[in-house]
Length: 201
Image (cartoon, rainbow, N blue to C red; front, top):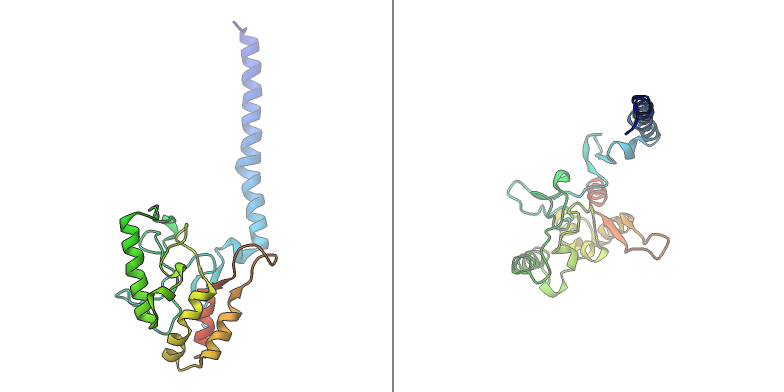
């Protein structure tokens, strides 16, 4: 059994450690991170993207749907991949569907999406890329594959009165190559692309 003096000594050490850790981790660290964030305000504030008039139109990190009030795709815009996050691209409910590849609900949803994309783009269902019918793991991916973007070029060009060459050039400008030349796959930023198309007409 320890003496009262030993107990008091341990208590003082514990209190000192708690005060030091509270100052370092509860005050110092948050101030340091906030200060570093101020050096990169665009990233620290959510990588917000503004339109031509200066209003915020989205985030470079979170995808969004380009649909009308009824949920139908807007013909003038390149469409994003499906989202399983909440009601779609809900940053507070980031997740995939958690359905396995043989799950009947997922199989049916993919078949329905494939038919809808094929009808919208006027192509054979076999030509619809996988990312056009499947959600990303987070449900928030702001990118699509170049193949899915290319599939949408004729529709977008016709709806906007642009040439397909103009739309393809915008797709190329919004495409990020493989990291370091070999990591990952090329990806097209849908919001960036749609803003560029708005500037074209």
